[in-house]
Amino acid sequence: VNATEKGKRPHPVMLTRLLALAAHALAEVDNRPEPKDLWKEPINATLWKPCSDQRDWEASGNISSSG
Image 1 (cartoon, rainbow, N blue to C red):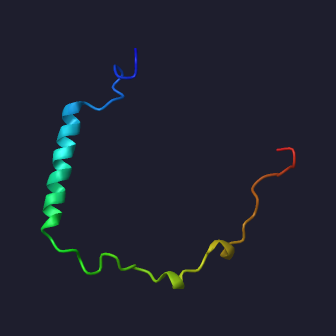
Image 2 (image 1 turned 180 degrees about the horizontal axis):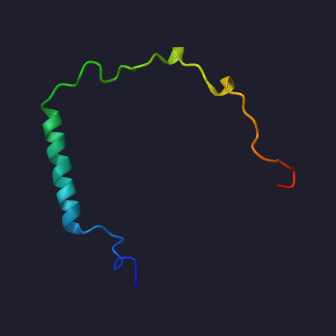
């Protein structure tokens, strides 16, 4: 049994339907203005601090060099 018989390739009708849905969605968005805060970051990136150093990490179990 080859790959096409196993259902690995999408059915052409499904692809046509998905393409129609995508085209419809793009047409709807085309008529609406973009929200003003669309590209605004919710958290200021300069205020971000890493937290990985705030925890006391301990190895679990015995660790040997041989694995």
